[in-house]
Amino acid sequence: MKNALDISTTTLATDPGSSPPGAFNWRSAFLGAAVGIAGPAYFGTLFSNIALWIFIGQGHTVREAYAYIFQFSLSLPVLAHLAAGIFFAIACGWVSAAYGRGATMLQGISAGLLAVSFPIIMMLSPTGGEMPLLFRAISLCIPVFGSVAGAFVYARKI
Image (tube, rainbow, N blue to C red; front, side, top):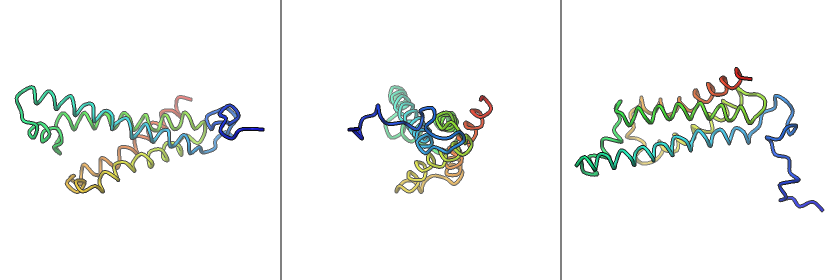
């Protein structure tokens, strides 16, 4: 009798032959979206904590340090977050296209649309309304366009 939970008897979507060539794969889209969400979140947390300790070490108060790190201007923290967002958005599309093994552009678009759900949820928070319109547009465009670019780069590679 086969055990339904036995992984050795289950064919994963990333196994060769598990889906016809050119078929869309939701698992790959979700994997790419996970990269597109987790990467910038981890980088943002790491960068913000390091910057916070540096500013406190320079004699600034915690309030001043947070005000500088989370300001909406083209400061070093914002540019670093932007660069990380672009990098991980491209990785989002590339991972989705690579593990999807077919329909690369559709994989990239789907992963980008799934990844943009995180900025949307953050904008719906009580403090999300404080974000200027330009930063909202950037937060919504980077995951989708970056993911499509990543899928395009992957498609050109193969």
